[in-house]
Image 1 (cartoon, rainbow, N blue to C red):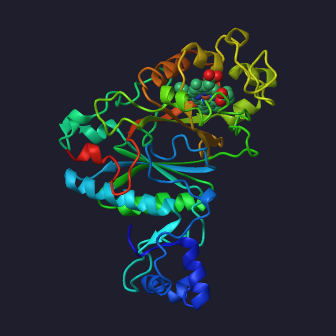
Image 2: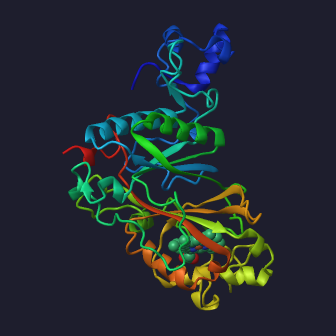
Image 3: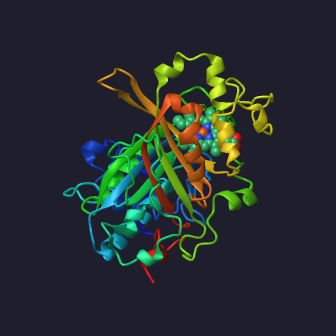
Length: 408
Ligand SMILES: C=CC1=C(C)c2cc3[nH]c(cc4nc(cc5[nH]c(cc1n2)c(C)c5CCC(=O)O)C(CCC(=O)O)=C4C)c(C)c3C=C
Ligand SMILES: [Fe+2]
């Protein structure tokens, strides 16, 4: 790690002590390297443990990490046909992700005559449990029938676009993408700063295809409610249940070793017709899911996490259909709002559905197919975006993301 890395809180503290840089705009925090030297190497400043999620590890952070309040997911299309440029970009993105996840800034304010490397809106803020998660789309490997980086033979087994569904209403640009970056944090400004600086780093090599924001909120320890007012995520296995996660989330059988320890991210942007929903009776709403609105309990039960008896649920209810596949996925969805539709005046809002699974062909796609045909929920929703990404295994210090794919 570079010596000139310094914690965001430390920058503010040092500038207060020296009286040099608190007026960021005026003084420009022009020589953070000098300040760093004056105060010794702050690269490994201890962080408030509960505010950082380690970037390095066996698995990428942001997959089974307890869900943070805010997300930005960006899909990029690569603009280069040179593998070395992709490697350079992935190295830069990896380094930046590690630095930001630790709540630090790097080479931010060294030169009065150059644009600052870091955009600055997270200065003084903690890491806010920031995670950065990378995924690769099938078009990363092959576009217009071209093996663009000579790595098509290394494509993970289950990586392909999600098949078209009968009721799909997919809208440009929310379809696919060569690379995705999911950032999540407990502070929206920290999350935005992270995705913005990833985008900035990619300029000239990676163009943003779509950018999806999202939020959730719930009392501590409780399941967040979606914009239909229902607890969403109740049936997820606990993130502490390693055996279940190995069964559901982590790839372990790919011929590609860089993928083992990774997962597949399924993304659907699902518009929710709030005005239609708000006019439907409580019974209709509960019959849609097969769960009670207030408690989140399945029909026939009184507790949210009690075992679900499929027979007790309405035939085409959402939960009954999902369960009838016999498959499980790990959901990490966020609500979104995006103004109003100028044509209809309806609120543009919905669910940025994200799930992780080890085998989308077996787990996710059959579920989606069944739901697309028969789900009671379809009366109130429209799927407008779709993408599948292969998320490589975690990164070790000194490595970069997907190194095993890009190097022999
Ligand atoms: C293909 C997978 C799924 C899509 C797409 C999906 C969309 C979607 N879901 C809700 C709200 C709820 N979903 C709930 C449960 C649930 N949903 C899926 C899968 C998809 N959902 C699964 C696998 C499950 C769990 C089934 C089980 O094993 O019990 C629930 C109930 C509470 C819960 O367990 O989370 C709600 C509520 C919306 C609003 C939505 C699209 C907009
Ligand atoms: Fe669902």
